[in-house]
Length: 129
View 1: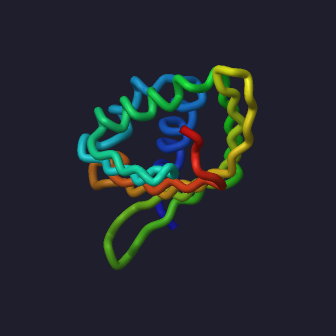
View 2: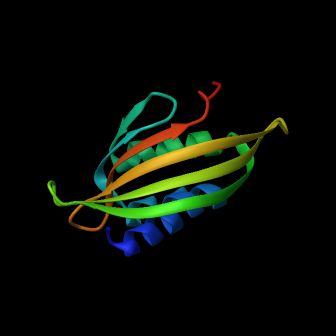
């Protein structure tokens, strides 16, 4: 098992900041060198780029309701790395009033400084542009 404190960081950081549209908090829990492989098949490098990207995506929604189904801290003994696995359901409403429900799975690596430096994100469908 990994460090459960990292679960709280990811839940309060990524998920609550997304839901509340407060991505300005991101730099407190994401490493400057973060690399994110997003569910829309894009890769984003660096906290500033990730923050701008997520703000742009989040601006497309008037409402987001997240339900976390499971959050699991894990530890890779062979690589000496902490990871947090998240399974969730998101209900979002876009600016045109259309509501969608999305199943999401994320895998977060936590660096030695206790910040997220790598994320893999998957969802049940490709995002419409």
